[in-house]
Image (cartoon, rainbow, N blue to C red; front, side, top):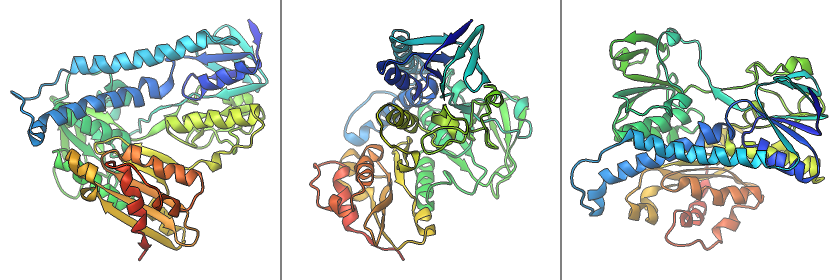
Length: 459
């Protein structure tokens, strides 16, 4: 059956549903195609389930520290993985159900379940239905990458998605990959009670961050008892009677790590391979991402790519901002651009890392004259009161323009406190505006004016 619409949206992730709502509210008919789970990565295998697990892990960690706060608990802290998983599942099911209900009851929106495949620049087939529209929006997201490492297909490895199905606690979890996803799972499962080893190919964890941030994160994890193996240049896998044998080639330590479970957390890959994009003339880059312009349009007029699949952001908030940019340009007569977006994100270990803008390394590489300030969390009253003084704050400013170039807050509430800097950078205001503000005491954010007041020329 051939059916005509004003727009086709492929994927019900973070950008697709709100775009459908805006388009239908403007009187346009929309076909929304979803082949598996409504809500995309964030709802199903990303932010919502993992941060629910992080919260459970934090509760266990805090319970073990009860005596530090003068609280007496009888007996050791126990973990019920089935109840922990059920709690995460409930959060996911509620969010997923809400997205699906919204779409199915949206006037002007028709939902199609199945795999979408382009037949031309204006046609998409879903099962027996051939959908036609002058505008098509691709919002297909990504999945865990599985590099062709020696022996990887000979062992029962896990990814961030299949980890969520576990109802039992791994005896020894070997996490391959020392970046954001891997570190979050490493800490949460160690706090649940697993022995955890992180195996990272590079010389340090979270390589995109400054060396001082990377070193501090490693110190936090190792202080809890997590084993970190960096410089693992030749990672390989073999079956083992106890689970999985992971080969490493580090400068020190045992040549192999024997784990009951192995988690691959070595990056993401876009879900673009089976869309038939060649039939529409849409180009892909070497990694399978869809290149887009500043308004998120592909090389084919009328076809847009939003979210993880366009390579312009790998976060829920950047996917949602993609929707905002497209809606503003197409419906509001606005002129919004991806290049105007200030990059910000967080690493949700405990304490979290909040990041915005350039790292110090990037700023120095730019050749600008810089002002830099750092402050340890041991000198933040709220952190001291909470007994959570690990980490530090860092700010980088252009010495000539006084514009904030970037900041890192590794410490309690760092993921929230960073927004004071995000907002100021978005407003393009000089850092001096922040130094004259009067923040609330006692908070982590109250130290931001002090931090920026301590700026000194970079050496």
